[in-house]
Amino acid sequence: MSAATNKKTVIVTGASSGIGQGIAIGFGQQGANVVVNYHGDDEGANETLDRIKEAGGSGFIHQADVSDEGEVEEMFRKTEAEYGRIDVLINNAGIQQDSDFASMSLEQWDKVIHTNLTGQFLCARAAIRHFEQQVQAGPEDMAKGNIIFMSSVHDIIPWAGHVNYASSKGGILMLMKSLALEVAPKKIRVNAISPGAIATDINEEVWSDEEKRKELIKLIPYKRIGKPEDIAKVALWLGSDDSDYVTGTTIYVDGGMTLYPGFVDNG
Ligand code: NAD
Image (cartoon, rainbow, N blue to C red; front, side, top):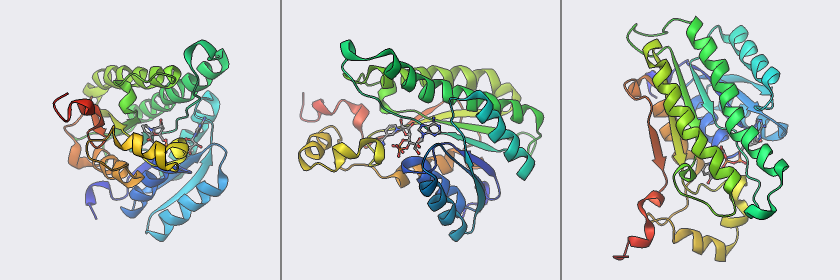
């Protein structure tokens, strides 16, 4: 166990499944206090909390829609009331609503942008407001707050048929970098993780179908689909004091998907 993440208070949005669940359990295994945010899946959220507790961590479940300003503010108020401070925000909740561009409805565009981009803005803003009011838990020259945005390889790889999703993730890239620059002098760290293909609910229709799975593997030089734990391990490090000098960076955790796989045999 790394003492670096021990007893931190961590809010994980969208923690009832997939990557968010893996990260929440990972922090639980390190003894952190974990706020398990969920939107609709209370069964998944309960499973996450049970596994955090089994692993020796503690926490509570909090239902909030990340795109709702009031609900986000309430989640942060409750966390501070419970634990006295907030150390790490894992800004993870996200959705896809796919459509070719000409058929994409304004509703599909708005829903994805509101959840993936505005939702991450609202949670990050609430976190920054809390971080500014609190002092360092550790040595004075170390961070007093830490935000990790869950982006995607589609913040740099264009994705036909998913313009709303790719736009939201491209937006996160500059949201993360601009915010990191603004708050670094206040000793607040801001980074992003961009996963490649990770087997979760969001893409089940691809990895559960043998033909689609084979096609997907062609895009991954490392030749395997990722697991939530692959992302959790990186989030734990970015969320720990071991990465204290890292800010404004995106870590691509993608088995090489961003390396132009078509050029693997000389193009
Ligand atoms: P997932 O569907 O298992 O998880 C998404 C979570 O977000 C769910 O728990 C869902 O309930 C929650 N959520 C959705 N709307 C919400 C809202 N309004 N308020 C609060 N919570 C809400 O999928 P996942 O793959 O674990 O996705 C997690 C993040 O990782 C997303 O931001 C996604 O874009 C990103 N990502 C995933 C992959 C992948 O291959 N799985 C790749 C790149 C990026």
